[in-house]
Length: 129
Image (tube, rainbow, N blue to C red; front, top):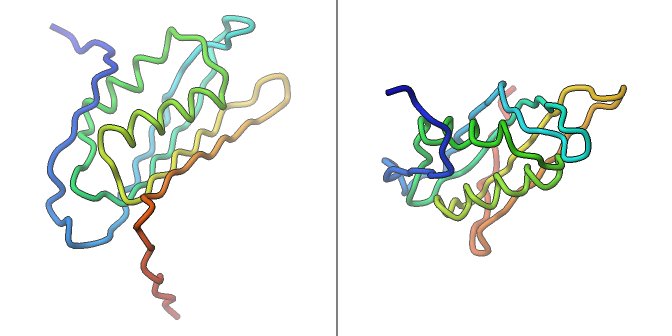
């Protein structure tokens, strides 16, 4: 049976919870519907996070993202919904969702939403020459 859209997100144990490291996932085929016109909105979603105990399983993420294709949603709302759902299941040290929507009516929209665990401090990045 072919895969179906799903709101169920799955995780797996972080193989290195003793390390701070960043996972970046780019999803270039996000689609939802404009709640005003019913026309499709297309976006690239960039997910960046520092996992704590759980990492997000990619196939479930794909099916989750696919589940928005027939839903009406404002850009700001859907970006924050995605962030909230991902934070709820994975409880990362840090997570950022950037949604870069394609042009509509001559306007590009990018929405950035992020959450940080209250007790987490990022490590200082190394600046290489």
